[in-house]
Amino acid sequence: MSDILNYSLADFFYNDNPDILSPPDDFMQWINHPRVKHSFTFFEQQLLAAPRISTEILSNIDNKKRKIINLTSYNYLGLSSHPEVIQAAKEALDKYGLGASGAPLLSGTYDLHVKLTRMMAEFKQKEDCLIYSSGFGGNLGAIQGIMRKGDVLILDEKCHKSLVDGGTLAQVKMRFFEHNKPESLASMLEKSKGARTMVAIEGVYSMDGDLVKLPEIAEVCEQYRAPIYIDEAHSTLMFGENGRGVAEHFGLEGKIGVSFGTFSKSFGGVGGFVCANAEIIRYLKGYSSPWNFSCAPSPPVVGGLIKALEVATRDSTLRDRLWENTAYLKKGIQAMNLDIGETESQIIPIIIGSSGEKLMHFAAEIQKRGLFLQPVDFPAVPANARRFRISVSAQLTREEMDRSLNIIEDVIARGLKGEALEI
Amino acid sequence: MTKEEVIQIIKKNIVENLDDISEEEIDPKKSMRDYGANSLDMIEVVSSSMREMNIKVPRSELSDINNIDELADKFMEYV
Image 1 (spheres, chains in turn orange, purple):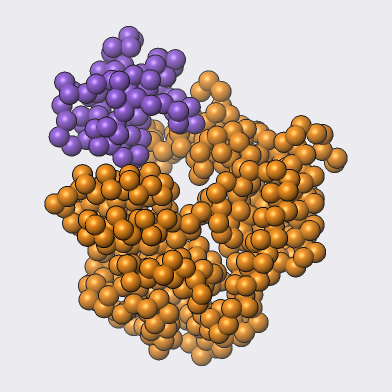
Image 2 (tube, chains in turn red, brown):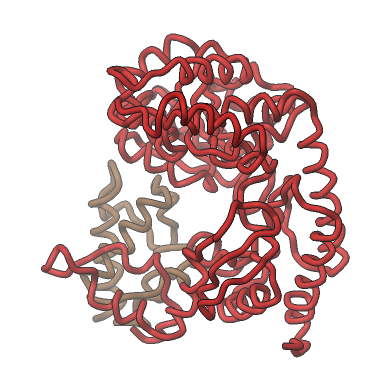
């Protein structure tokens, strides 16, 4: 390898090592290089308490416990640690035990699962719903269960890996259209004429925080009679007058064929849901492997999720607070002239550019000053747009936001201007 | 290895990974996208070609490449 630091995880997927239980030889050489090792220290850091805003981690940088402001968790509405949600989960744990102890078709379906399923279908205004133990498994399983070899799945090029892997598993032809460009989608649909075709998009794109251009995209899909599969992982409970997501925000819920989302983000739990017409949900129960060959979601998690849905939808308090906080942080960051891309949501990227070294240097400094804001490196984002990614939360207080903005200004804004950091 | 040989290897891998295309139809001044490749197909073609040539070009250096000819030029830096 010429310059070891130019390589990334994208370069070691193929493995020619004759020993199948060994990684590629150069992978070990790369990952053990001190500077590569340093960049990996930011991953898998241990949180020592709930993902509240003020929490504690065991820092990998110096192996010290550190009190931090958490701007990285997906606990957008604070429901993971909401007292009513915790109480509901405890009650479900007492009544049903830890695990469902069975696949949904055989012995894993409890009254709790049926209740959550019905609530979700009603919430998303679809006829029926399936709930999965994992969000990734939900996307993977819905695509794999609905589509067959010879079908065409057209995806926005920024769609999540779970959708792409679903397409791979279903052995469909996948075509990617340019991000959020209806004319590119139309050209892919034109090429796919004659085949059974579905279009996959996301409500909020997770690395940039921008919204799907749903009115334009829905119009093109309607023209070609292609159903829309929308992943509202980062928008459910937050967008729309009633929190139903980006489709509600645009008033286009009727144009959506399949509405997917996760329970691991705004809901504060774990799992996934797929809402659609009753017949395709019935069909999925027979063919969606991550549903019918996995243990059903854990009862305490389901009990907590039912309460989370109730809390988030009984009024708009939590999402109102989220949008107030988002506006405040965005304004503060924009005042520093930092590049936040095209964000329109609670995900605020701070785009640093092509220097992985700067990114990691800032990441370490930020953390030492008490801010948990994780770096996002290539290949997760383009090599010329490495970044930090703020996940705003309704839990943030003005004081926590001011402290965070101060750290961002001191480290990132001043660092990018070439000013020396005061350490 | 000459650039022509590199282009030949890329063409062979395009044919192996994409439907309904022959080597004669491939114009190196075009992008694999023009022949219906999606991003996963392109990774497959690039990786198979690199393995055949026993080279390893970092993926981060491939993002600005616009066509097959430019890809061959990049590979030539490593052969």
